[in-house]
Image (cartoon, rainbow, N blue to C red; front, side):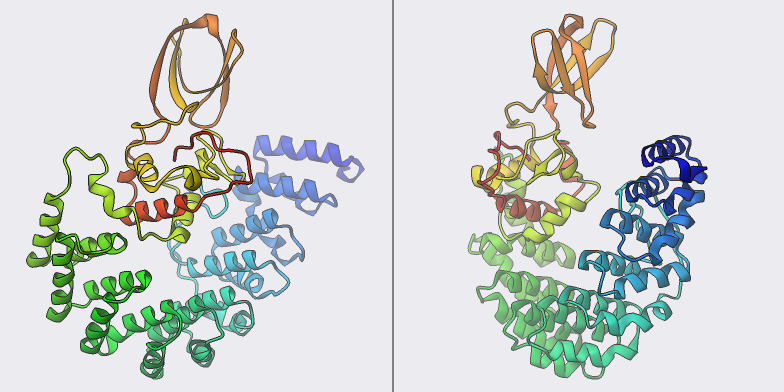
Length: 477
């Protein structure tokens, strides 16, 4: 009988079954109309409808699934968590006909398979899963050759897979990647990491060769690995690196020195901390030195930290965060902005059309505002609130209270956008009282992120200089 219905009628049936959370909706996953299938998949995955989830997972064998559908199919298998589900995900990762972004997602799922995070991989909602004991190595081993014939990014994650699950069969692949200067830097770093995990006998020779590599990321990783092979030699090289002019290598060197529990490593850090107190250290590595001293916990290092903190200006609202103004990673900042659930920047802010409308569009914030403004917006969001995005609190004559941002006011009715993005229209004659509230930005944001995270966010926001799109409106992070 279902086949006699039009596509519009079948779509209506799917929407009705979604409202009822009825597992019979799974029958529409085989519908000839792609839009009906997609809507059924969204209902099963997003509501969710657990009894229909296995049927969604089985779609993984169908070729040519569109991105939104395949993501949900992959996630259905990930959430099921069995060996057959892992095998299905591994086959997608190995399939060269699948878009790279989805192959990478499949590999990430395999990396996290037995220790899944609490957030859903598609919706980012809180949907925790228990730890698992699937033999992922047995699943991954047959497809690794296909993964290592993929792009640099695919090969990079393949190297992590091999290292994480101790798959020694691929050691020759990893050695070849580590030696190949034509391979991507991150790919080679991942290969060296995997060889370290596998305790490869070839690692010392590869580390020696990599110390002189043309790429700074590869050199930095080689120094880290050398600290585990020959710590005395490593400390000398790390101290030399600190006198160079490559900020990423300096930052990496500080991190390794902090991890090497040796007196000469502490002495190298102490020398630089003394320079920090004397204001003779570049802004880009100040935070790294402070955090290294705190992580080591040595009295002489902490004395320098206390001396530096004592110099902070009492009347400066940014005093405790000025070391985050420079030296961040824009790439990590973008990951925090778009992917970190506890920050949720994208829910309120839009960048180049991606994100929400509760807060200002940030597509050109780096063009219009300097780093101090960006930092202040994160650590003290109520100091300067972007015009047009002030929160108002409206008390109605019936006692209800509404808070949000005024999106329109035609003289008789007010459209108020609430913090969750919903729009409520209120008659102005029914408003008894009106007050100005705080910024929509959470004022406790800095409690949810580290100083390194703040530095990365500042760096990312400073790169947003899109002058070709709509003009920003006094943007506020």
